[in-house]
Image (cartoon, rainbow, N blue to C red; front, side, top):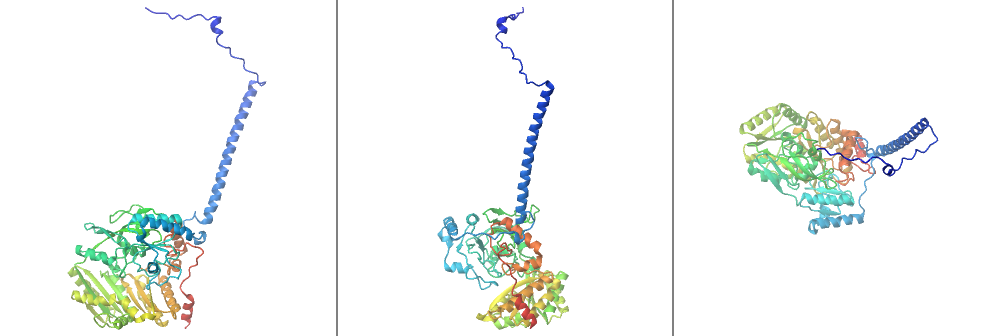
Length: 576
């Protein structure tokens, strides 16, 4: 059964309830004219949008052009940073510095902060420096943090107030590395001297920056391990990383760069960075570890290091060979390197050095006063015997006048004793009236004989008392030059010519001491302006305020003019 839906028929009552559509008002235009008007309106709107877009694009282009001009003027669009493109760094005034110091005291506690005269003086200069601090080049405050986080906190405060920072670890450096040129804060790491963890199976160890290399090797000896880099006594890991040092073992084991796996670094703004993990090798990203090594505290502050370790050799021995001339001794070294004889160390002491050692009387025997090579051997018992045999045969070909090797541990200590006394014996020759300028260079081993001989002749012609000792197995040697106020300019001339001579032989102004303040003017001579400008760009990228160890390695202050050592004395010396 279906149901129909009743729909009422349309009637007037229903239709009257819906208002009729009013007629369209007349525009006075025909339909064609209306279309033209609409089209005209669309064109006007489109033109307005296009004009706005053009104005916006022009404005953007103008801003981009202006920004590019500013960047160009500042050298910021370049891959390098020429000194002339920089503004002088701005540092905190006394009032602002006081605020920073108050916050640092609050962070560390009064017991870990010092402005005492003795602390200020001991962190300003040392007798070993080749460049000594001026009377106003002193830290205003010395601080003693205990953790990486505290170092980060110090850096954040100093960054906020623009207070310069100098890291201090050991203080045995020689080229003015820790001089506080801008009267800021010196961070002494004496409270961060912990050996954190030994990974015996992996042959690595985690340490803090104030661990000394001698202390470290005492700790490692019972495990049959050692850390090869062996610079001067008292050197600590933080400073060794900063200068990229080496030592007598470099002939076989290489430099500090070869023995650091990873670093924990605090950057200028307080950011904490770990440069990599612990594997022996990695191709992951940039080599940040090696960027920090040798940067002398100018790019970041090292608070922790993972170091590679070596196994102690089963047998060690020492031998001493004398020669008629430095040329014969250095040529013998060149041949040892070329033949691949695996000596652990080969050290040269010149005739004047051997005279000093005898005069000082600090060793248990009298030495022949001739150019002398000291060899160190290590390996298996049979391997050491073979090394000694090969070395004896080779040095004889170059006119060795004597060759003696240790047959016992006591003899080994006795023969190496002279090498250990080299610097102290030179200082004793000078007495209290002289200072000792200790400098180093390195050249390709094939140029070693030439550079050492010319340097010895130059010292003699200049009337300078000095000695030569070298880690000659890798082409690196040191000059110990005695000077006082009367002949300091002459000494500067000798050092200047030594550095220029090494660079002219495709060598370097420093093999292991670092640049510091003294060697800065020679970087452009050695590497070229573009390389130095690239280094400056790296410095400004990581430390744009110039807070970290100001005035070391790279100059970022265009108001400061770097000068090489006294060239006037060089001219007068040559004319004599």
